Length: 322
Image 1 (cartoon, rainbow, N blue to C red):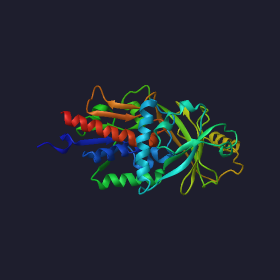
Image 2: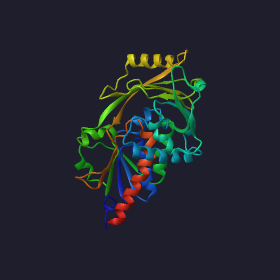
Image 3: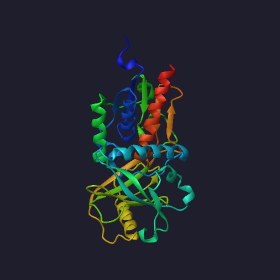
Image 4: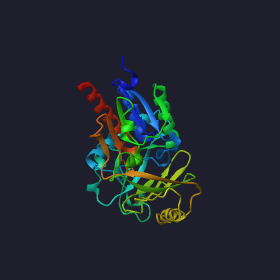
């Protein structure tokens, strides 16, 4: 008899952020036996630090990522009626050229429209208001982890130094290590995009984002108990410490948008987004049982389910063909 690790339906997922958790659950739903290995518990992942509103920001290639975002939208919409931390909110996004906003085509009819002049914050010229999913990490990640465990999933804290070491695990191995894949895969294309955000008391301001100016990303995301205000988008910046200058910049930008009363800051968070010229979503050429699913930039929550469900279908086809 084959051991569980040799069975074709055995999968090891490396990483416990939103990409790892959704991949694991989608694989379970497709009939695979899944174990997650991770360097950190879910509450210490990058995914636990972010605002996690649905918006395909700073991620390529658009043809694939917009499709993944659309699939994820449908999954979150379904989950919003029962999953902890998931809700649908109106979200205003600034834009320069409507022709470049391809993501709009992947939303259900009637869920997005151009904002009126009165609805735009001070200084914003054009914007789209869309009904989008919000997944609050402190609530949603534990929900997903519990769902994974309830379906028989196993979890182990463990680090890996090489793909060769990972290749000794289950019949399939899914690499969801985010920025950690830079060393594991010797990936020169993968680099950090530093984000600093402020977690504040809930604000009496509609949630919005202005991603139109590189290096000056600004947004407010009101959640159930607090708000997240950002942010920064500095490429190749490995600094994981909070920077008082960035805090001042974030608050000054907020004031420029017409928010005259500064919010009460509860916490300052810094995270390094795993950015790449294109998401790596493929089997490894040297280790054909390892599938890479990393490099989602600033849109991990936005595309996670789309990637996860397509991944599960890829593996299902692989097993069927063997």
